[in-house]
Amino acid sequence: MKLRYLGHSGVSLEVAVGGRGFEVVIDPFVTGNPKRGVELASLRPDYVLVTHAHGDHWGDTPALAKEHGATVVGTAEVATYAGGLGLRSHGMNVGGRHEFGFGAVRLTPAWHSSSFPDGTYGGMPTGMVLEVGGLRLYHAGDTGLFSDMRLIGRLGLDVALLPIGDNYTMGPDDALEAVELLEPRLVVPIHYDTFPLLKQDAAAFARRVESETDARCLVMRPGDEADLEALLAQPA
Image (cartoon, rainbow, N blue to C red; front, side, top):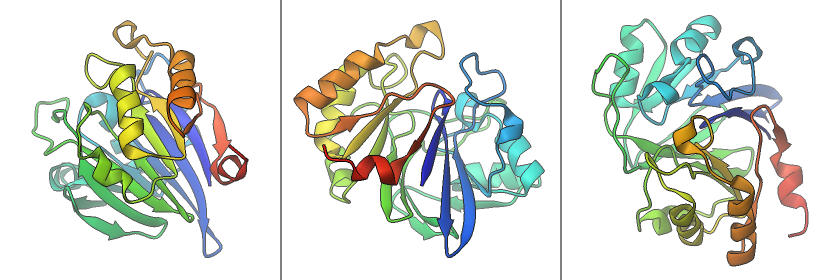
């Protein structure tokens, strides 16, 4: 499985299942992102997963889903909104799990808010646990620290994508405590440095993760790619 960091909270996953390749994009905020790492034309998703409806996460979902016939996956409210735009969609809710062609998605709680750029209510904000290519990946979405992260960690996480930007989400201190609750094998910081208000030292956070927890930490610049299977196979 290949992970590409799009910038902000956006990532794409490329995975092969049964001889077929899938591209799954999460929170594709590319257009208008001052720290974007890719051009929109480089994305050809089969699925677009949306953790919540804020513009820096909903982002380019309509354009990508329309261009490539991708299925939009999110809360029932996100899916209904997407359907109203003529897009293919699949609605879920917190605690639910569903099998798709590329793997399974489980929606988890997130402590945040959620509304579309036009003010329409976007349902509960969520995180997502993906079971893809034999790995289990947690994208926390926009969230503060909450103790039930320990329950998410009991699923057995290979990778955790965690916001560290502070102000709107967890900052580095709370994100470090989240690592202790989640117990992933690998941590990737997201949702930082996009705007001046979110400025953080990701390298310093990575050093703390690796010195104070059992996890490794991968700091990705926008546009960076990583082979997760190969990376996780390396000795700690």
